[in-house]
Amino acid sequence: MQNLTVAILAGGKSSRMGQNKALLPLGTMKIIEHLVTNLRPIASELLLVANTDEYAFLNLPVYRDRFPGQGPLAGIETALRVAFNEKVYITACDLPLLPAEIPRFLAENTEDYDVTVLAYKGKIEPLIGIYRKSIYPVVEKHLILRKNKIIDFYPQVKVKIINFEQLPENLQREEFLLNVNTPADYEKLLKIFSLKE
Image 1 (tube, rainbow, N blue to C red):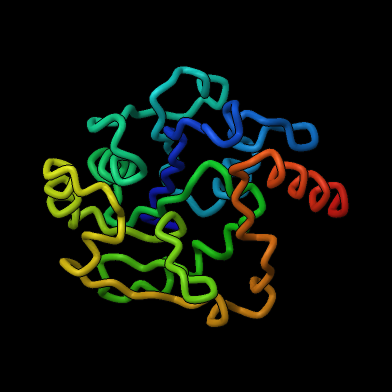
Image 2: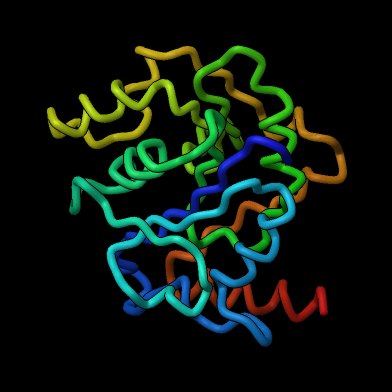
């Protein structure tokens, strides 16, 4: 898509997994390589936010958090600060099955909203969302105040929530939202992936 930055946040500690989940193998590639492959077609700019050099093999720009240790909101701050485009799709590094059509749908339906996020079963998914670069000062202020929960700044901006059921029917597959946080999640992912091959 024209004028869309895709930012993959890969700065987490993977504490529940016990190792870097983004680098776990999935078929012939690593989990993060699947994300990059899936999302590249919709990105006019593709970048990573990470606090490690482990992703050099992807040949993508990697930016470090300015507020390390303050969670995914710090990753959003970094992405909005460095992004070239006004619209920035923010995603986590552990969603390898999410098709590009979902962020494309969000981006096409942002209208004049500052944040457009997906919600599933009534729960907002802040790391499946389009964020406008113009809200950067709000995000930065929250981090300075150490208010690290992403949705805490939502009341200060214009937010559009798109429910999972509002996606086109072919995108309403629960497996697309599988987060790989634990060894059990990884086992589930491997099973789903083997069925797709």
